[in-house]
Length: 286
Image 1 (cartoon, one colour):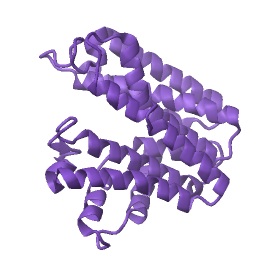
Image 2: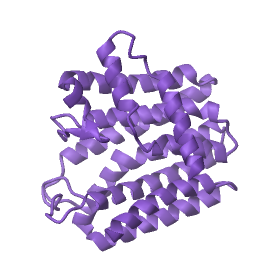
Image 3: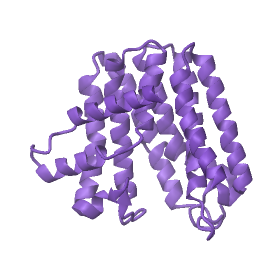
Image 4: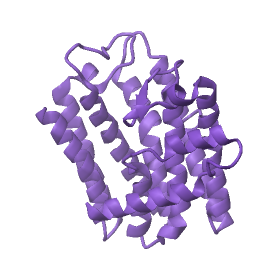
């Protein structure tokens, strides 16, 4: 996994560079942005962008602005997810959540600033204006009212009785579409054909669906939280743990097959899938 760690270190350094310095006004906002975006994290989505770009012969320097933007967008979503009006989370990534550290109003502004900064990075640091426009479109579609925000709405306004279709659409929009955008951005940065971009979008979406099911499995607990009634529902609560594990395994196998079909150098992509396989294995054995 050393190559994935290399990507992660590169992303961490790039984030340090592209985020506004804490010394710049408004100080508290910029401190909050850096506090959230630079905290210890897996960086799985931006790693996906770099890995897809490189496996298709693209240059990492061309893909890095998009990779940073993807991670910053993900961070914004977590900041807003943690707010008292949403999940009311006290901690994130092992330390105080943004609203607990800086206050609720500043956390809202921090999320807003992270989101706009992501687009500023792609627009200002992508060398080819045509490519920048394509990348901005990909990210915007993945996170807008038909994408990630739709998924969040579905999560906080579940039906009285959860259905498999509703849960899958929630998973797809809230989680998998950003994985798809990360992969598609990598392919765009490698100047891939539309067919190849679509193929890797499928790879990212499939990987993201598996990731979310595994997250649900890891979050499942013995007290029955997340039941199939009016509350937000998890995959194991609706389908049972055995089916949840089996469906995640099937998605991971499909992701591997897509990676092998899409490139002669799928090793880094397979390593990313292997990370999720390991999380699933750990969950299944616990």
